[in-house]
View 1 (cartoon, rainbow, N blue to C red):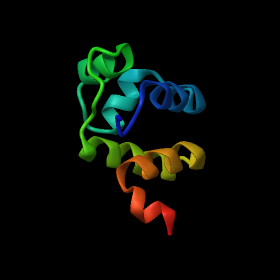
View 2: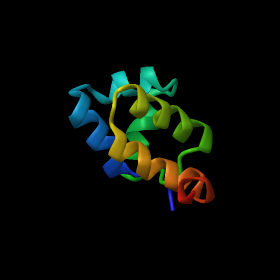
View 3: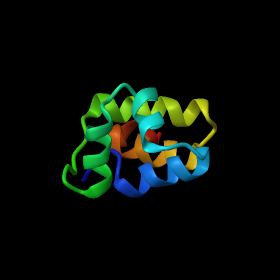
View 4: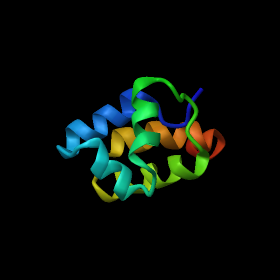
Length: 80
């Protein structure tokens, strides 16, 4: 299972009304890396990047997405 799934990324883009290039910039990855995640050419983003996306979601008050990512990154912590 991926820490951040393509559907999560698309939901973030739609919720924030930003382009993938802006999300890439805000999470410190290349546009091609993000494009590969969205297209399915790459399916397992790094834990570091997942934590950056998680932080962004919390800052932008996207709690539902943040919770899903948190459960994937640190399942034991989110059960407490």
